[in-house]
Image (cartoon, rainbow, N blue to C red):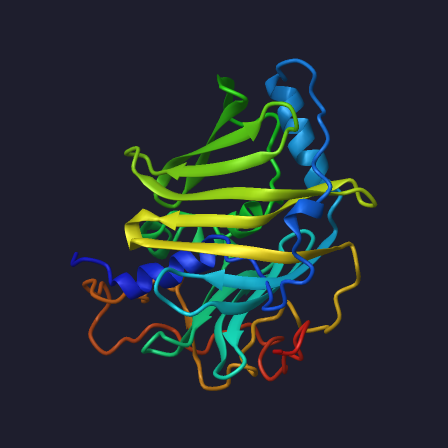
Length: 320
């Protein structure tokens, strides 16, 4: 198999990792005025206590909307919008006022998708969750799409799952979570504030111990009305794709209705010039890899769910 295209790795990574959202207007982002998360542990917490605190924080969020900016070194910043709704619906859009949309990724209970304007193929990649888990594409970047939600502060842990720790690390504690993916068992290391029970960093390692990605969260704010703590700044690194970027959230809008009935549907109509490609299809071959199907058998490009074809995405917010 030939080396995987760096562009394709970037697209998969963008879909899997947390490109959370923000806006050009920084009026609402005033870190010195954020209500700091309260101290919840007077003594070193147990594993069960840490897991319960993390899960409790996430359980209080039914919907989340945010806007702000995405910054990549040596490239112009992008204005971004994000919407989340339980249990796994997510929409992220990034672009500029002048050029319009540059990135669009999201998920619902059935599938997830991602699209990048800079992708030469102009493809709208998508996959059903259960099919992606066992597909060759999951072995290219073995990071589940759910990490997008986790990186913006919405993490849920199985109290009965394979979790080790806590391991003391100064004023922090570590939990080691093992997860099965299409590429084998990966290990997620969570670094947690020992007094506040807030996740400040995540590291994901493949079965060989190679770092797949990391997300550092900072500028946390405690939203007293909802009893929720969320970060405003997230620094993400993907070593395999040699990528680093920063997400800055100006304001969190928690548990408010999300307008637009089609927000979490595959945007085939909105991105009318994009070719839908199912990356979980056995005939799909990433760029620069050897095909495993007979010549002339292209990847499936039109088998998108019937309920999504022809629906125009009005969007949860217009581009500003």
